[in-house]
Length: 193
Image (tube, rainbow, N blue to C red; front, side):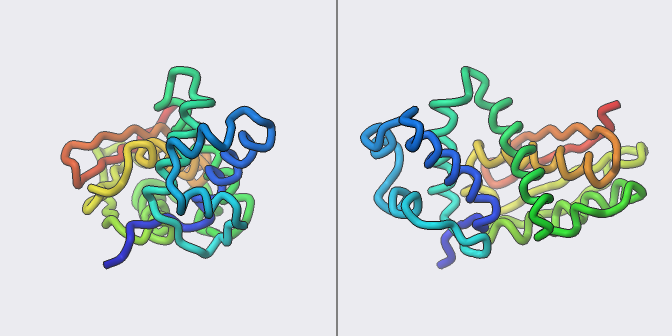
């Protein structure tokens, strides 16, 4: 059975940020040992390979550590911002060139690009594009088989989708999300102007 996992390119930011907390002594090894398991601690000591896979549960526990230390009471906003910053970092690497589409890539194309990137980042879940309303650029992404997809990752993904949509379309886009079923997540993207 495949372990639900996230690609190193997406795992890296949480890994680096937890290590930064340790380096500046904002958290002690003893404190993180309460939240992280032995495998997570081993991963923290290793260099993250962008093409490697890491358990989504490990990523979730790293996000818990970061939220506890940095969210300042608004966990959801913190996670969305992390997702936007992850999008910026990933786009800067040039690995996912789909994020460099031109400003004419509206609606259908934008949604499909986001789905393609998500398929490269997660080894589980099933992502589907859905047109939303008559407005150009508005769309939804339905994620099925998402029972193992943590809420924290839902919000970082929401931020990533918002960043990617804005970058691709060339104007501010707003992403929201909901989990109507334990196994389903819906992301809605609309013009923010």
